[in-house]
Image 1 (cartoon, protein in one colour):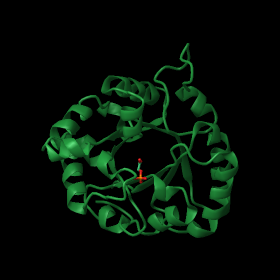
Image 2: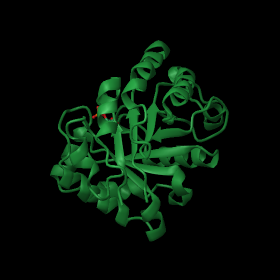
Image 3: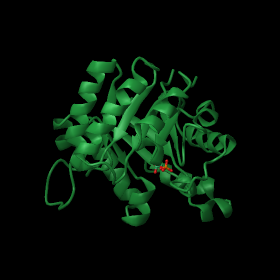
Image 4: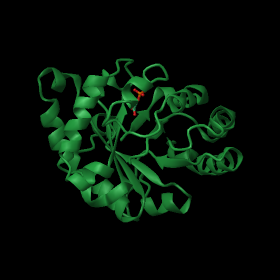
Length: 254
Ligand code: PGA
């Protein structure tokens, strides 16, 4: 059985003070709720220590664990890579997951499939989990190239990582646009991605949907058989809407 995972991606929002305030607000909203749903927040690097500390206090108060994720990390443990942070550094402060290959990293910062794969491999080798993002642009979808784009992005995924590997399908045209994929579009893409995996990997690997998920549309997406959770950007910034999505999450996907 794959447990649902609801992961918030704060992008370049929420410094340490706003991070602490978010967890304060979230606590009464999710206390005791949905214990079988896993929760995660991907905070900006500078807010990660505050997020880890706040998540620990939050769990002590509510009984609900929340994993803290970084939004990117280098594949190597250390070295001359100005501006980068490494998985061992993240592990040392209590971070347990890292997003890689988000479309903003691909399109705005020129990260390639090869670089993303190297990051993922290195991070997994250091014992952290990875949320590996893939997804097509609108032009690619309209040109009927969704499957071939996904295929080439998936070619680089380190599939042997076990449960530490989570895939996020995020159609670029749905990210931050308010245009959500329909449940059929999401299910089709997720089923296509799952077909790429060996049967044992397919059974255990969670595939999150991301792109304009809100409390209003969450249930229709999360009931799809191959949708194992959500990667939520804008709606994860406010505790009330993040909690709203968590509250709409069915308890198991299969
Ligand atoms: P959104 O972002 O929910 O604001 O569309 C999703 C993401 O980029 O992960």
